[in-house]
Amino acid sequence: MFLLLGIEQVQINVPGANPFLTLTFLSYPWSHSLLMGLLWATLFGGAYHLMTGYRRGAVVIGLAVVSHWVLDTVTHVPDLPLWPWSSPLVGLGLWNSVPGTAIVESLMLAAGVWVYTSGTTARDWIGRYGWWGFVLFLIAGYGMNLRGVAPPSVTTLAWTAGIAGGLTILWGWWADRHRTTAGGG
Image 1 (cartoon, rainbow, N blue to C red):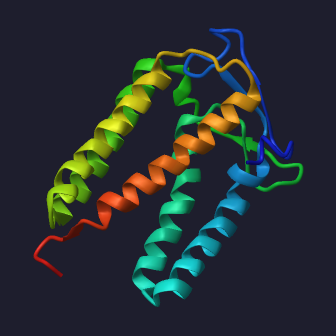
Image 2 (cartoon, helix red, strand yellow; image 1 turned 45 degrees about the vertical axis):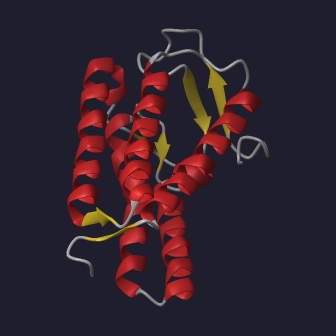
């Protein structure tokens, strides 16, 4: 959304400019700075708490949101701001190694699938097959990103990311509604 509004900017690269991506992030302090990550975490966790009254879940959601910045710090080249205004840029540069990035990110996905699958059980057919379909969707999406094909424009990138992100949220929510915590709690 911030790309479409012109609030943040990326540049589509000539293939090979970034070993892992076909993009250079020029300015994205509102979605990817540490300070805004903390604010987004507070907003999302707070909204969840207001909707459900479930404090522990709100804390987990807040931690998950801010963990995005922490994990990005490992993978990104030094392009992550600490705050939206003139800020030092950080990043450990895992993206400089395509095999390293693919291995680390695949292991993180596998760990997340394992944690969720071992902590929940399917209540019905959708909980079983909808969940595994969702996992395959995530793997396919990541595989498409690994192909390194540049989008034709920043607008196309923004719309595609928005639609894919929305589908990911809806599919994950739908599958989760058909699962329960392990042990039935």
